[in-house]
Length: 226
Image (tube, helix red, strand yellow):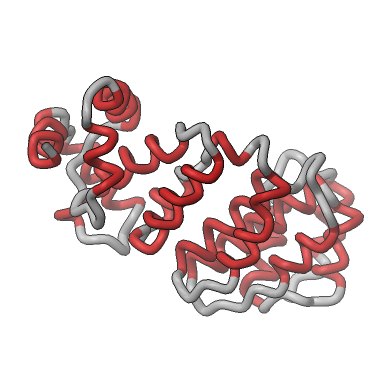
């Protein structure tokens, strides 16, 4: 069944889009990219749900192709039961090997279970797997900078130390977003230089590029560059 799914994906491929995708995700082998545009892939995912395709994808790991990983993400995102979603997610996370797959994971069941999610995020932050840590930080950025915010979440992210580029980029993204949404609770991380120099400066760069941060605050951050 999975072979038929892959065969269909190759029928839907776009060579130019494959090249474009490969340029955005340089850390994976281009041979793993088929080149199916996202709207077409989503439409195909809906077709698979009607049959056995969803179960086939969820039960077969690891996947060879990026697009099959994307289908897997689509199916995880749509699982309504929190516990079932978490089970499938934790089976999948160790096989995530790029930022695009990682950043596509946005389970709908998490929206109504943010209190239950935090202990799992704390565990993921301690992982030795790059994209599990990146995913944990992203969850804190997506679900916990508005009504679910607690100052300790800022400390949790500030405490992550990594040499991995894709982890550090996510830390910078988190803090740039936090500065836009929670300036008073976040700017102290910049003032006290709690982040590594690279992440510190990247955070300031991203924050100064944001349209959500006032010019006077951008000038303040500019003076804080290391």
